[in-house]
Picture 1 (spheres, helix red, strand yellow):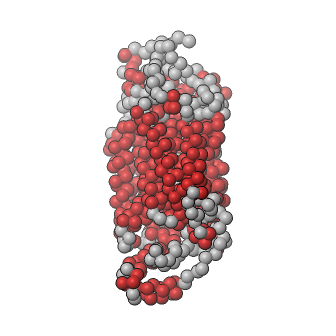
Picture 2: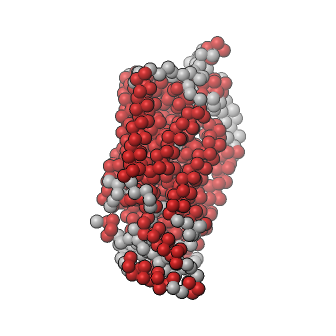
Picture 3: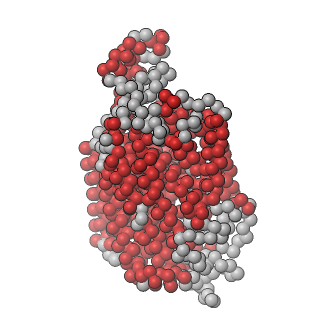
Length: 624
């Protein structure tokens, strides 16, 4: 098939910097949306218990199943997913939707296996669980730092970039000004209200995202001729300017297949089923952003109900994100499907490709007046929802798992102030990383996110599975297994940044380990190797005593530990603090530590950790 090259004059008409004049109804929709979201955030903040760590970080453990399920959905389906998932769908077809469908079973595993153990252990964060499970602090601190690194590289920076890209394409606003405005509005109710504000606004924004995306989906299918028309037009979606003697401009022949060739497929089926399961278990069962929502439930039944609702909701992105991305390429092949570096740079500012603009391009071209404003609100909702979730969870990790280790006498007020300030630092670092994201993985945002996750997350998955199901695993095995997995993963990740994916027409000079091993295959291997190292080192070192594992594994989650009444506990503390020289602590630190732990875990602890074991609330508190 011969293609007619575009002339330089025609290139000048490409949509670089193209802005769409908003009508008054569009503006009204956006303004009303912002006012309503801010009002909801302020209202939920006022009714929330924000003066304690438990109230601020876990919404007072008062949430019911439906806002939890909605928050699980919206916390994951941010603007990065709208931009990235639709972009990968435009470039490669339906298979990327398997990433969303895989989450349905992982959410059930969260509700029925992981959350019961977390609740029985009485923890606020995932690093805190590992500290209780294995003792010591090095695993807890390592996991906190690694989680924050993952948030910066795969969550915050990608959400900011994708949200700014959408605004730039659809509104023609200044990129950085738009980003600053959104971040300011997002930070107001995140910092003010804690998790209660985040979950309630998440629930609202889930409704907005789903309804708006469904409207665009129907408009797109109507324009392209429904599913049969999409199959026909997508297969012929070839840009008018191609790179000679290449095939990268051609749509994939397996674009409408979910299970693809294990060797030549862009998303091979063994990787989709097994490798993706490794990433899904990390994301849905061990990631602080997700698990924190389930831990805010008033009881285990509501946590399970939220998981079920979230699983059902994850079925829909295939239809209202992936397929609209394919529709966008079918309708606008010269823009979304461009392959010539000069044209791509003119269209979207990236030489490696413009598939990331698939979703915003569809919005600005198909949505009528009023509904266009609704979709702008949807994308803003996606960006803000994801950012609020990550901001709150990141501040929780830093304040409780890192800062509290550095300042053992820190008050609750100090912890909350530190958590809020840390959010500002995260934003600054993430913005500096955006230029690297723009050119990574052939310009496909979703592939960038999943590949980075595949290099850093599998060791965490292996550790949590073994920690919950294998009582023989001990602290040395866990720590050195994590170190082994981190080194192997970092080597692969650094090589990815050194040897970039070539643009269309360029020779692929990458090492064979990069060219021939898909990142999902790497995730399987890394998880398995880490598990082997953890198990072998644990076998070579002394086991953890059985009594130290009460309510910390699947097999011991129902074991009752001696209850300590508050009165008896304070009496014990008074006796111990009467001899300061012997115990080496002052009474103020005992009282602050006891009050702090009581408020955010609902339990009492003997505050000298070297003398008394951290105790958790009775399982009956949540399991009934």
